[in-house]
Length: 187
Image 1: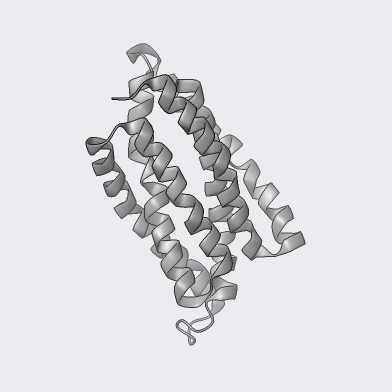
Image 2: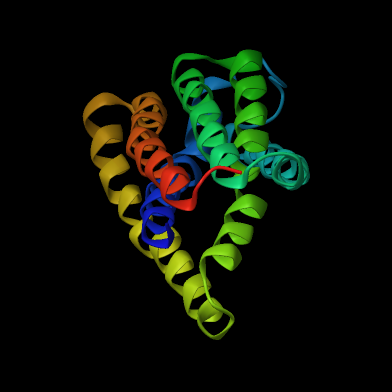
C-alpha cells in the first residue's frame, strides 16, 4: 500500500507544480474585469495568495474527512474532486476563474492531512521518517518535473491549457490511489 501511495503522491505533486508555476501568469492574463485598477503583476500575487489561504481551509476539511471516513477511500475521492476544478481553471476567466481556483485550493490541500496519516499508518515506527522523506522527494522532487512539462504545454498551447493537463495528470493518481485503497483494505 505504501508504494502505491508514493505513486499517487508523485502525480499529485506534478499537478501541484503545474498549478503553482503557471497560476500567477494565468491570473494576470485572465482577470481583466476584476479589480481593473490593479496591475496584472499585483493580480499575479493577490489571487494565488487567496488560493493558498483557501488551502488552509482545505487542510482543516481534509483533517475532518480523514476522521470521519476510511482514509484511503477519502484520498481517492479528494483526488477525483480536484480534476474538474483543474479543468475549470483552464476554461474560465475573471470571477469564475477566481471562484474555481479557490475551490481547487480547498480541494487540493485537503489531501495533505490524510496523506500524512496514511504514511504513518503504512510505515513502521523505525522507518516513518524515511517514509515521509520518500513521500516529499516524490511529491516535490519528481513533481517539479511537471514545471518543465507544463512549460512545453504553455508555449505550444497557451497557459490556459496547462490546468486541464494537470487535471488529466491526476487520472493515474486516482488509479494508483484505487489500488492503494484495495491494498490497505477497507474499514
